[in-house]
Image 1: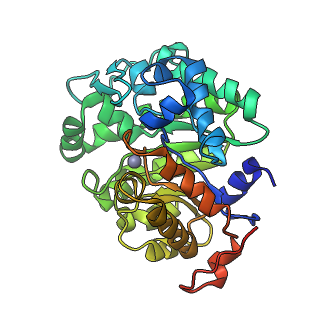
Image 2: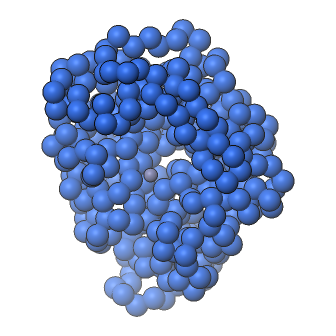
Length: 349
Ligand SMILES: [Zn+2]
């Protein structure tokens, strides 16, 4: 079975001959940039460079998918946020486009032709054309909660959720149209599936706010966007997994800050796949090959369907640790999930 099929089947919790490896967020490190000879910030603003660096997710790391949108600022920059695209060792950052939360948002007619959107769309076309038969091409869009952080500033927006909930609902409805249009364009460009990133993280969004402002919109994303989705929310999401599960979204990209992965596996239910779960700080940046190996084995045993980093990898992490995830996962049969109860008995394939 080709990596593409292993990845796409795992997104739907269908049987595969081995555990899938992948990432819904950036896998780029400075040593990976050195390895392939291209670097940030060019890889955010030039489609050929972006595609080249994204390919390394498969050609160097051996992952079953590639994902070229390394930054969180693409559609926000097309919406008018001023973005500093960073340096080789520093991720991009941006400034809000509006001083206050308003539903009077101008969504440019040429949104998809603007650099922030056009570059990743072209990179997806290049990836589909070059390696799309072999590996899964994952795109990435932001949900309206994160887009509102970017457009209005985090503090401004969170205050508005308390003081002006109706305005916030109208803003979310407008911004989800950006999510839909960028998603459709990415599917057209060749994306097999999409990461839907929406930072409804515990310290910024209570489970009640998730339920009241966001869950229904995520369900609508699942129903409207015509490809499998991987929802990415950082941090400890245990208190909202029950709402996430009911959105119908195929897969959830889970952070190691969730206190019990076994409990998370239960909360996710039988239908929703889980992806990620490997700690960026403790395992990928700070760990050894041995600690990567034991973390991967443990998470696979608990039932993570697609093993990989929990979130965008820190730029100063060693890519050898990212490669080690693949090396270990390729020795693990998915049967292991059901057949072991703490004993580590990998099935060599
Ligand atoms: Zn994250």
